[in-house]
Length: 212
Image 1: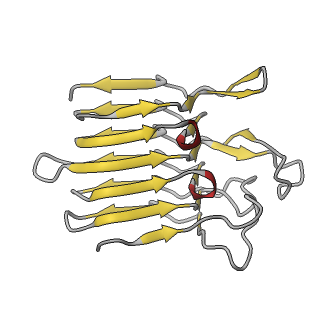
Image 2 (image 1 turned 60 degrees about the vertical axis):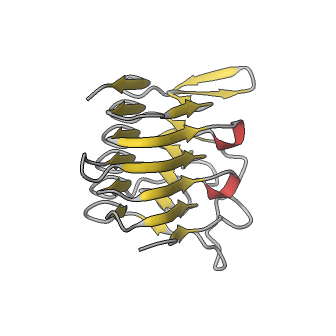
């Protein structure tokens, strides 16, 4: 299963899932939202999707499991991107993004970029107004990003590639048994709007790195 794309850019207004939109609404499923599994799954992308909310991104509609799962050895996986390629991953019954390999099938080269993990828009305002900020809690019931037995994982990067990870019921980011992981420019547990900071902390650590 090589070079597949789940989703696409949110065309036009960031909030509106128009008929010509390439993004998916992946919500209300009993188990996980999106799963990529197998050592023969190469060069796959998950971009622009709403996972765990309704199409307005203002109301909770979580999947029963995790938002996105990558396991059993896939290589070269991209989750999100800049601008309209970022996913919104909120209100899922497990963690937001779950990357887990094993000694016999490690995962390598994963990009996690520009995603909003654990928040939703203000549902009392017009949810289709692009000026309404995503700053209301809709945390996933687990870590925002969990990475285990994976190499060369980049979470964030440039300012445009930064993830927002807040209000999750666990750590913002946890990296266990990984090598060459890069975490840069992300907002983890707080948002800045001009000079105003909003405390939207995760219940665990902001970033946790462990050996095993």
